[in-house]
Every structure is written in C-alpha cells, then in structure tokens.
Length: 322
Image 1 (cartoon, rainbow, N blue to C red):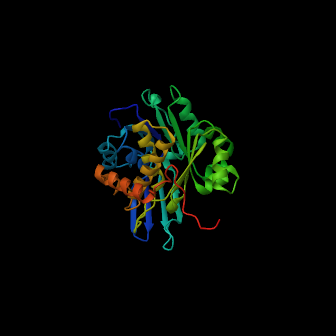
Image 2: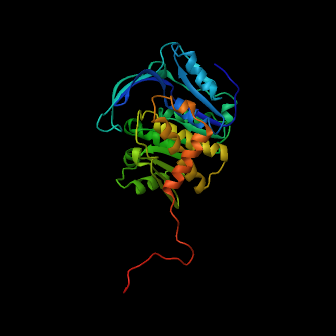
Image 3: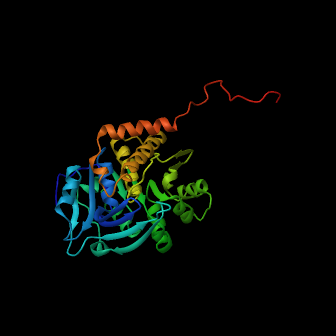
C-alpha cells in the first residue's frame, strides 16, 4: 500500500473493524481503530502519515477512504491473517457506558511498527493507545527529536505495564488520558493535582478527557477547562477520543502554535471534531465534513464559552455596606 509520503504529522496505532450496538442502532465490521479516527480527523488540517497493520481481509474501499483524505498509507502494512476486530454494546441508560463483548487482536497481536526514512523525520508525532514498549520503540526510531510528541494510553497499560508506561510518558510533550486514568496513574484523587503531578514526570501538557463533560488541559502555569460541544443526539461514541486528538494535533501541526493559547484552540478544535464523530457510526460523519461545517461549529463553541473579562479598573458589583 503506498501513496505520496510527507513530513507532517505521524500517527502510530490501530486500524480495526468494529461491531457496535448503541440505542440508535448497530453496525457490523465498520471501519474503526485509533489510527483511523485520528488520521481522518487530523487530515482536514495537516498532512498525516499512518503506521498500522491490517489483515488480508481489509477491504480496498476502506483503503480508499484514507486516500480520499490524502492520508499517506505507505505505513499501512497488510499482513497474513485477519484484521483486528472489536465488538461492544453501549448502555441504553447512559451512552457513555459500554461493555466489550469480544476483542480479537489477530494481526495486531504481532504489530511491530517500522518507520520509513521519511516518517522518521516527522516533526509532529502521535503515539496512539498501544503497548508502551512499542510507543518507546517508535520514538527511538525518529531521526531527531520531533517538535512535539503526544501519547494516548489507557488503564490496561497503567495496571499491567506501569514502569514501561512511566518511561515513555517521561519522554513525551503531551499526554492524553481519560480523567479517571489521570487520577489512577498519578495515584491522586484531585484531577488538577494529579495532572500537575504527571507534568512533574516530564510532559509539558496533560489533556484529561472528560467525556460528555468536556476536557481539561493542564500546563505549568496554565489551566483550561472546556465543555463538550452540546448535542441533542449521540449515535455512537466510539472513536471520539481519537478524533479529538486528531483535531488537537492537526491544529498544532498546521499552525505551529505551541503557546498556551495555541493549545486552547487545539482543544476547542478537538472537541468540535469529536462532536461530529459521535453523530454517526464509524467514520460516516467524519468522512464527509466540509470546511464550513467545522468552522461554523468552532465559532459556535467559541461563543458558548465566551464571557467578557473584567476590564482594566473594572470590578464586580458588590453588596453595599461592606
């Protein structure tokens, strides 16, 4: 599998077939995986190259989806065997709660990422949720230290591979975790304190994903809390976190703005991209977005979060007599 390579944004992760059931319906063998959601999301803003493995059963039409978004698929390796498969069902009472019914790693079980010469020069790198040992191996393959390295992980690695995870976390710039995982990894119940404790290990930024409650971005001397984009209907939450990360990293890679304000805008764009994904199954909504769709929702979210700050010399109204 090949297409024109690039030196933009590199993602290393999974490409899978998901079978999902939610209160809104179901899909069988729908295109999924962290690298898929991330690369499609980020491709609207930055050149992106994906490194992943699929099986002999991987459909040509799904490869064409990547190519339609100008995603470099030279690192999408087809191996002997079946593509990684996952199936799950979401609660009818709370769509944020899901039960995994089956996980078949298949060719993903032997995934050993090998970067091309061009990919080793990528200035922006996203290490999606895979074994922390593999994440470290990818980082060590880079020709030089990238401008920005981000990493996503989960409780499975916190519980089973803490030492290896701590080692790679100490070497990255941005860490993505669910809020519960931030607390678990830091062994600290307060989310802000937990994030700052992790920053002490090495990352400059901790992004605590909070599902329907939004996201918290913690840096030294900077704290940004953003609500999720409000929707009246959620069809399928699968891949929302990876889509968020794709928008987040896509903005940073395209703008080059690594200031606190740049990370705030990145979080807002990530939230916008995630909101599109959950409106449909798999990449059905993510695949068809227009620039006007994204910009309109970004402006709407900006307006939802806007309040006039106190001006110079201005103070809040206060009760009389004190």
